[in-house]
Length: 120
Image (cartoon, rainbow, N blue to C red; front, side, top):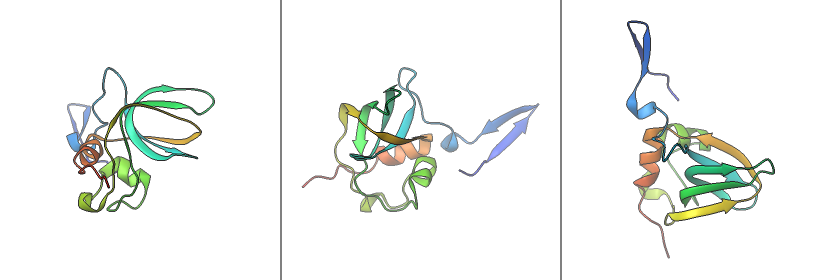
């Protein structure tokens, strides 16, 4: 993520689109990678020591373009939302064997939310 900050009277400010995503009841919006079920984005409700994660308002990120990696997707969102395949949001999902959790920015969260629901 580009660190576009400005310091005024000793206080450092960051651009709104690069700030961490808005929290839902204190839960952070994240992108996770699982060993078995792929990549998901949603609000991190719970994480256990055995690598199980519960997400709220979650979407599976089945296929994406416009970001070179999950790190870029979590930082900047997708530059090609019309080419992404993100199915509908689910209210809650428990995902096992999570191997990566990346905090998302506000702009990335909005980018993911604005991708049209992919369905067959």
